[in-house]
Image 1 (cartoon, rainbow over the protein chains, first blue to last red):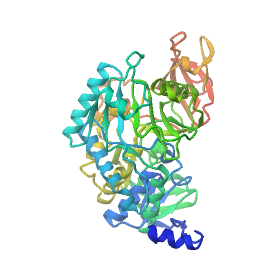
Image 2 (cartoon, one colour):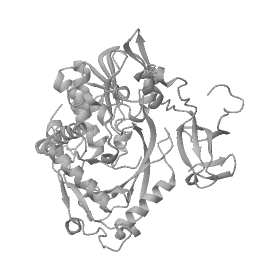
Image 3 (spheres, each protein chain N blue to C red):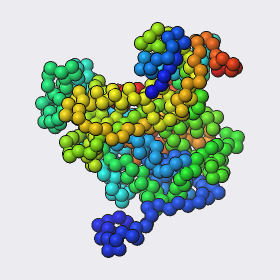
Image 4 (spheres, chains in turn purple, cyan):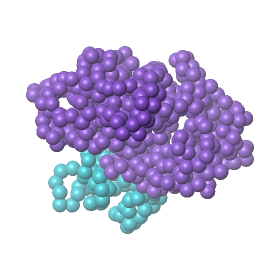
Amino acid sequence: MPRYSIFSLLRNALTYHRDWQAAWRSPEPKPAYDVIIVGGGGHGLATAYYLAKEHGITNVAVVEKGWLGGGNTGRNTTIVRSNYLWDESAHLYEHSLKLWEGLSQDLNFNVMFSQRGVLNLAHNQHDLRELQRRVNAIRLNGIDSEILTTAQVKTMVPILDCSPGIRYPVLGASLQRRGGVARHDAVAWGFARAADARGVDIIQNCEVTGIRREGDRVVGVETTRGFIGAGKVGCVAAGHSSVLAAMAGLRLPIESHPLQALVSEPIKPILDAVVMSAAVHVYVSQSDKGELVMGAGIDAFTSYGQRGSLPIIEEIMASACVLFPIFSRLKMLRSWGGIVDVCPDASPIISATPVKGLYFNCGWGTGGFKATPGSGWVFAHTIAQNRPHPLNQAFALDRFSSGALIDEHGAAAVAH
Amino acid sequence: MLLITCPWCGPRAEIEFQYGGEAHIARPADPVALDDAAWADHLFMRKNPKGKHRERWMHRSGCRRWFNMERDTISHEITAVYRIGTTVPGKEGT
């Protein structure tokens, strides 16, 4: 695989960019692999990449029912941060953020990671005290986080309505300067290209229809392109995790909900930070194309339909106009829904299962994108070593029977 | 958006209702006899099916009464609305 560089760009310019090599192969599935990853989103592709890179396991296939990154990887609001309350989550998300910081170099693919700062607004005294508590907890874990006054918020985001007389005044905010956004498609493509270069087979348009077991061991997966044998199977299918678990006779503490987002028409640069508000519920950033990207809360009902109800959209539009009156005349270009796998404690499950050789990485719910590299990194370790890494030990399936839940509804910052 | 037919008030918009999750989860008859795994199954594990789902709803902005509903989780089509304590008319089991 030729490296991408300024020189390869110049060389290809001489031939009018007609000779670029495909970024990854599209091989026929082999009869069997050491490891099969079910789900070709960011987390699945990252898992395959780190299996090859960190553990030398290259006889790996990623099977994807649609196209790469066509699920939640392509449907999120691309926010990356690590300002989580509890130690377990803080360490996991911070590990991921550190991987983000070197990811473009590591993958030789520009994931356009932009550390422009993530603000969480406080609109009442309780919000402010809660944010202060969180900032202190986060700093104790060695992660950058600070409290801004209303004046500092106004300086950083001049278009935000910070006047004192409004119904939900901005009393301050927490800020993680190292947080930001990344280009969602590039993350999937970068991991795919880098995994493929290390020998991983990426098989698209191949839906898993069954998980074959012999006794208490997994031996492979039935797919729409036939049976593929495997020593180990890692499922990273987000909203469809319960469906896969049922194929193996397992039950998960997960419910699948639509989570909607939308973008405006492109406008000139106007917002250079990520602004989130839990009380006036919306989170906004501006993409490099100039579109304002806004995210909503989940629809209450369960769904696999990749769409939600209009009242949710009306609600975030109202919230956006309250915070940013200047947005009121913008037109919205398109909205969409992704199916998110919500856990009772709003924390993920990265775990072995009672079936030998079968692993699940799911339950990321409303906030999985930020964890993409870290999630793949610890899941690769869990599969390769058949035991969790210290970073994901607490995120095992058995926490629901032991009671050691990791309640991160507050840090999720998305209503659900 | 869903158009839900409340068994008491008739068809109303989704925003009048509150979702109550999977229906027909029976509280264990002998709670003391349950081990941790069985409690986890009762409290946290869900069917979360892709297809027909039986679920509870409450008419929050109307009669405030609970009822059951069968809904397809792909098409969102509502295939049955039935009262608490009953099952889908003409179908056995839950």
